[in-house]
Image 1 (cartoon, rainbow, N blue to C red):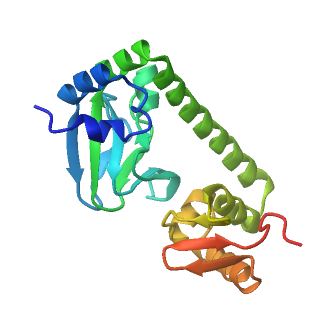
Image 2 (cartoon, rainbow, N blue to C red):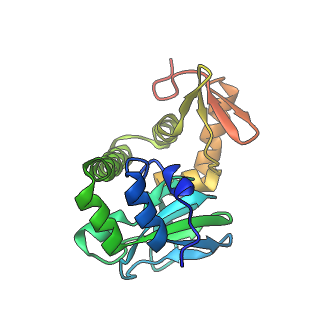
Amino acid sequence: MSNVSTALLRNVPLLSVLSDEELNLLARVVSRKSYARGSLILGVGDPTDSLYILISGRIKVFMSDLDGKEVILAILGPNEFVGEMGLIDNSPRSANVVALESCEIVCISKGDFKRCLADNFEMAMTVMRGLVKRLREADNQIGSLALMDVFGRVARLLLESAELIDGERVVTKKLSKQDIARMIGASREMVSRVMKHLQAAGYIEVRPNTIVIRANILWPE
């Protein structure tokens, strides 16, 4: 028996396009799971059986080699989702997902997810837009690795992570220097140096839990 309310599902942007009847049906079959910080939620090669929607907390999507070296593909927060690609092409999980902090997740089974997509055009379009967004981000990351130095990669990541809040470009996602290093394929030491330079030159202002972008850090004058 699910303990998920329709009100909770209605607050998830991906599901907000569903009708009341569809939400009521979905609330009866979805499950809600809790994960402690550091828990492995999904592993590479796992069978693809559900869509995972984050209700609270943060998760890290990453790949690693045999030596344990990580490349972070994404850090996701509340209302974001993961696992949709495997549900569409029926392939096993292609990345690991770990809880960066305690989190609550709603799981929608493959069958229920596909029924929702088949019955609701707007939900299908939302999923497609999410897939296109991730493909563009992957293209940008590949281009950055090939064409930009570490300074440019750090700058691009900060700009792409920023939101416009009260007229300021602000990075609200918690990104440690190690996280940034693993997202752009550089060492933590190099990232630390670049961040210090950006701060000293006035391009960024580091506040508790946020980074404010003060100037064009991608092509500084």
